[in-house]
Length: 283
Image 1: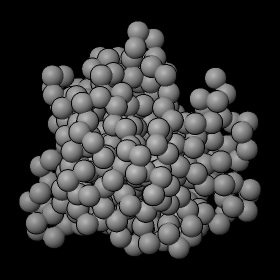
Image 2 (image 1 turned 135 degrees about the vertical axis):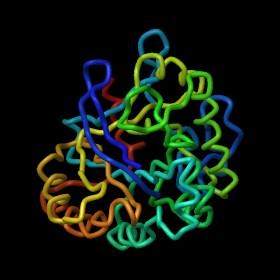
Image 3 (image 1 turned 120 degrees about the horizontal axis):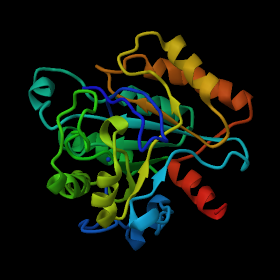
């Protein structure tokens, strides 16, 4: 399975590909909101979100302020599609525990965009990530099916099932034991249109894209991945990466190179929530 980005509403151009590493605290019929117990895991009781767009459309976040210091958010997609269960049963690994261990060792906070199907397959890992204050888990749909047509060969979610697919992911996170999932959503493949934004407005999420494509999906050259990230990062950047052993085998090695180089340049690693909060303050 591959996630890539395309031009969206004639304004957003990005490109990447797929796989890897989810959670809320209450049933999600609207915006997933953490409970008061959030403080125990250092998650804000009311995570920052962007105001709805024109006509109430779901807001779209691509990067943080360019003038608010050198901050950068590394994000990792935990992709597993609804139909990949047999491949997992046959031994394919859609997780990457070593990457999570590396992020912990390097003390790099990160945001993990997880599919509900991934959380179903790896509940212990989803719970472990979700309960670690170094990380935050956000929604990448349940099925990892596309929310538009013609999205890099992905199967599509029908319009009347989009909202349910997002809410089902939050339910899967909760079932896995993740205490708080963030009210952020990443479209599978990065593909969306005005109708998808309208349909998801009732869920109360902020859609999160990115401005730096790592190129780590299916890559085997970690040097090339690291170079692409280092050349693309600017203050406020959101980097899209993956943490699946089978589909992004070079990512963990690339992170070992990316992190010290960006720190030498004065960058501070933050979660997406911090960038969104900074963006909201600048409005």
